[in-house]
Image (tube, rainbow, N blue to C red; front, side):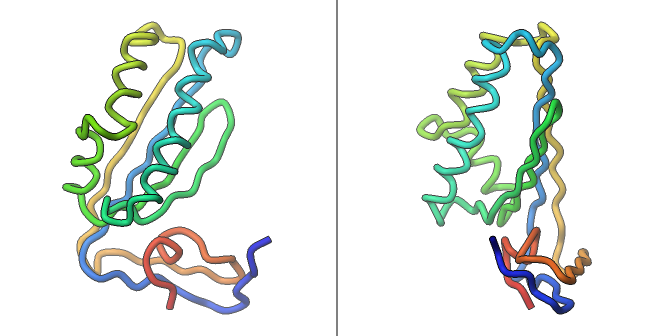
Length: 141
């Protein structure tokens, strides 16, 4: 288990950061053949991103249930968009496979939200927590 930091800490960021929320919702639980490929695609992408420090990907946390949520941090929107459109990376083929297999059938929902945070336009506090969130993805102070 990760050590708890029994003190109040925050994140220190050089430049802007992009917060990217992404997830899926299983609308028809019995259609495992539709939602399982979607559920297994994201861990492959995240492993790929952690292996490429130059990608601009800073880190992620995930929560699972009928509706999943992954919180990601990126160096910039350009880095995120570059990855999303790169034909040699995992995302674009996974996106195409989703559109072929699920499309707008209603079986599996997908969503994402992107927030660009300029320097100084953020606030975060962690107390009695392991390294987490923006502080884990950037620099803990």
